[in-house]
Amino acid sequence: MTADLMGGPLKLVISGPVGAGKTTFVQTLSETPVIATEAEASEDIGKLNTTVAFDFGTLNLDGQELHIYGTPGQDRFNFMWDVLCEGALGLIVLVAGDRPQDFTHARNILEYITSRNPIPFVIGVTHQDLEYVWRPADLAVYFNLDPLQVMGLNATEPDQARGLLIRLLELTLADAAPVQTPTHTFSLETTC
Amino acid sequence: MSIFGHLEDLPFSELARVTQTQTGTLFLRTALAGRSVEMHLQTGILLALFVDGFPVRDEQRVLTIINQLVDQGSGTFDFQSAHPTQLLHDTTYWLNDLLHRAHARTAVPEMRLPHPETRFIATRRPGAVAPELQPIWQRVEPLLEGGASAVSLARQLQVSEHQARTMLYSLRAVDLIAPLRAASSATTPVPPLDSSTSLAVPITSPPVSTSPMRRLLGTLRRLTQLVAS
Image (cartoon, rainbow over all chains, first blue to last red; front, side):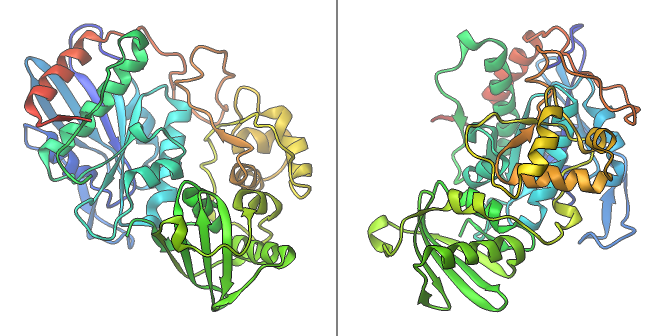
């Protein structure tokens, strides 16, 4: 686990397969216009444009600045994952709950990053507004993770995007100071 | 519906693991060369098995079908939760035991294989290793202490990287290994990453300062509509 010791900006990394909602999530959290590096997709990835370097947004809360980086979803940009994760306070891996064809890729991304970087993480299962969608508890079993580390959300909803970040911080702080483990974790007033 | 997909995307061995906490019926449509399979499951126990609507009870036939699903399963699947009283009770087989006795013989698609640089460790779970996996396990297990990736295994075992990834896939499918988390290994010595990985990657966490995170958390909580769970 890392954190900036000088009171400077904290860094949050958002990763996941193509189409998981990473750019949307960064746009939802960011207070400033997101700097996106989208380009026309050179292969069939299910959409016309995709992130090729990273998305960048910022959030300033009571003077504490948070820099939010969204990684590219394609494996050939995986050198970016290590670069972006260095010194980050945490990692959020997003996966679309209605696209089981992407689960293996999402797990591979998570395991690649976390086996190389000592970084706290949570999983966000997006598209929870759909009728046919995997639920976070089932994906927790698939990822072989504690259910608290996997949370459902709609990436367009600010409260839900912030909720996922809160969960990451709660788990990270609980891990850092077990004696101060909160007696409850938050949940949102949604069906997620 | 919350558990659905294609066996081409989520292989049967992984699907079975997800359903082990559930009670209900797993429908596998056109899973066996066009034939449909229906499984009644109660938290990991196979209570009844039907192929094209016909019950299958004989242990050897059940095992053959599980083998075929692991090896060649295709088509769509979905799981429908049910109360145990709504399920048929024809048999009592632990699905996990059946899976341990099954073993994929066909080539594993590239997309299912772990990343070459993801490191794995032994789970140290007790239990017998299936005879089909013994040769792989005996070669790989001594190299897993501290974590081993397909890249390092390929070098040490003098096999191709693809072969090493396939070995790791097979061992992981039966929970003999699990991915190493650098965060959890930060307090114990970890061997250096493969020389082929050129990026400097922190393995030991630097000192933690939690106060900026606490400040951030407090502000986020105030901003967000919360209910205690």
